[in-house]
Image (cartoon, rainbow, N blue to C red; front, side):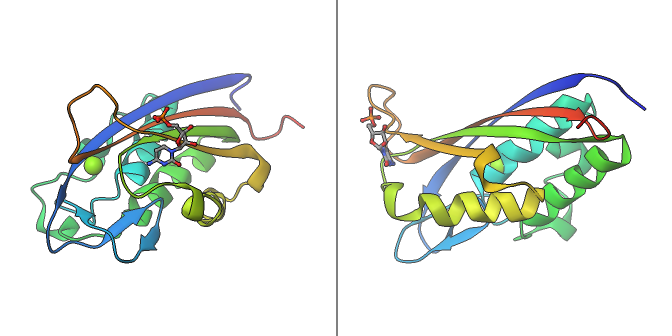
Length: 161
Ligand code: C5P
Ligand code: MG
């Protein structure tokens, strides 16, 4: 069994697009423009997935779920995270904590923060107090139609209490 700790970071960005539903962290946010993408465009879950894969040094989301593959068209991104979580468990690790930042103009995160944290905690099978979600506006970046997610995860050996 592996000993110690592993850290991973993930980044993703998607453009806002008409005719799409907005999903952030597996939560449907009604009444907002959605994000473009081959899958459901859940920028936060894509960054979570890459952070987990990064901690395991097992490549990135595109290697596990090629964007050109018709199977993943409009896919529920929770499936990508479940796959990454399966690899975490298989290799003897568990999540110590996750810290995420969403960078987007709208929606304001406040009314949705707790629902998204709970969704992430359920997906990652983690206590809520190990899941952090923050938001920033893309001030000065010149990216008003873009949503960005940055995620850091720490994994600990599963047997370490
Ligand atoms: O990016 P800025 O410094 O203007 O963000 C100030 C605060 O606004 C953030 O710390 C966060 O609490 C909130 N915010 C938010 N939802 C966003 C952007 C910012 O809740 N989409
Ligand atoms: Mg993506």
